[in-house]
Length: 152
Image (cartoon, rainbow, N blue to C red; front, side, top):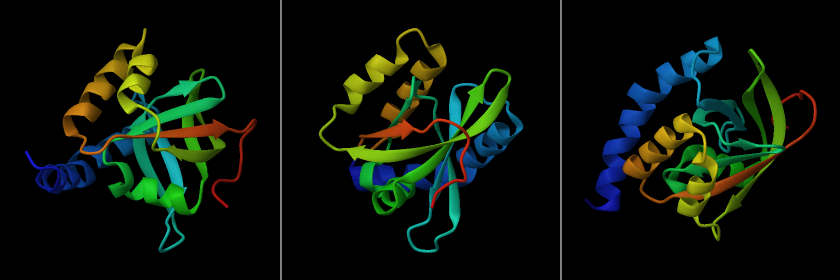
């Protein structure tokens, strides 16, 4: 299947059928294996939230973006790298501020293999990303200590 065709089919499926219930479950604290990424919209300046696979490794949070630079949240990061990630902290979720960096030189498949070791839910997410993705791109978020005020 051509990349353009796949993207045209997958994008509305994710935007209207998959992401809304996952976003709701994340807000309720009931979606293990996922986190919520908050970016500032590059055009409107409004806060945007996107469900992403849980990729925390210490003070770094990794994302493998399915559609690379075609993903809205990736373009938001390009224009404003200040983000927040809603992560599980014990039994509750907390917003953690961070600075995102796009890594086009990183091998997203190798990154996924590293992230999924010992994490079955991450493995499921990685398989979904590979199946639905068109142009995988690695995003590294350096998490800052303590809760923050969100994207500047």
